[in-house]
Image 1: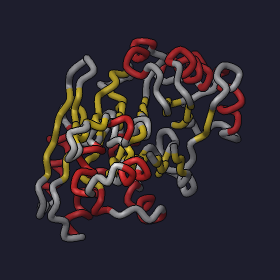
Image 2: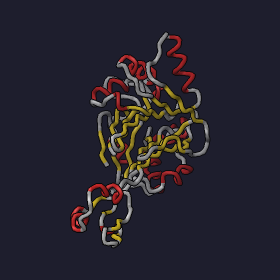
Image 3: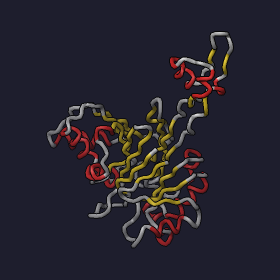
Image 4: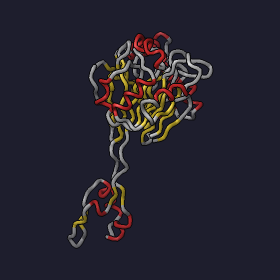
Length: 301
C-alpha cells in the first residue's frame, strides 16, 4: 500500500495548506478518499494519473471534504474520460453533484455512478478480487463515515527450486500458486506447502475522518496496520473539540492504543497552531508509533 496525502488541514484552503484529500494505492488500484477544494491541483503536483482513479470515497458533506468533487468530475470530461466513475458518499451527494452539472449545462461522457450511504452500521461498500472496503460509522455534526480498506490475501509464492526439482511444467504454476496439490505422472501427490511459500500478509488501512472521540469504532478497526485519525485540536482545546465534535491528538492516540493499531497517522489540523509537531508530541505521550500527515507526503507500508 502507498498513501499520498494531498491535503490534511481543517476548514479552508490556504496558499500553503490544503483541505482533506488523499490517494490510497493498493495493488495498483487508486482510491481517492475525500476531495477537498484544490484536489485537482494536488493530484497534478503529485504526478498522479487522473485516469487511474475509478472509485472516490467521500466521508461527509462538509465543504472541506468534498468541494473539489464537481470540479474533478468536470475535468474528467474535458480529459475525454470514458471509464466509469463510482462515487461513494452520504445520501444527498448525488443530488448536489447532479444539480451543479445540470445548472452549469455540463455533462459527463462517461458513466457516473453514485453509491449513497445512510446506514448507521458498518457495511461493505466495495469489493473485488483484491480489495474490500467497509464503512466506519463516525460521530460528527452531520452523517459521517470513515473507511476501512482491506487487502485480500494474494497467491502463494512459488518455491522455484522445489518446483524444478519435481520437474513440474510451468502450465501448472498458477494452480500451485492457488494453493492446490500436484499429482505427478508416477502418481505421487506433492503437497502444496512443499512447493510454495506463504503469501505476503494482507494489510489494511483505516481512514477516520471528522469525529468526536468515539470508542464505538474500536471493534471495526481492531489490529489495523495503519490508522489515520483526525486530530483537529490539542488537548488544551479539548472543550472546543467536544463542542464541534472533533478530536484532539491525545484522543486520537488513545483510540490507536485501544485498537491495537500498528501505526497512527495524524491529520486534519486546525491552523491555529504554530507547528504540527505539537500534535505528534502530544500523541506520543499515549501511543509511540505516531506519524504526521502533511500535504504532498507519502507513506508506504
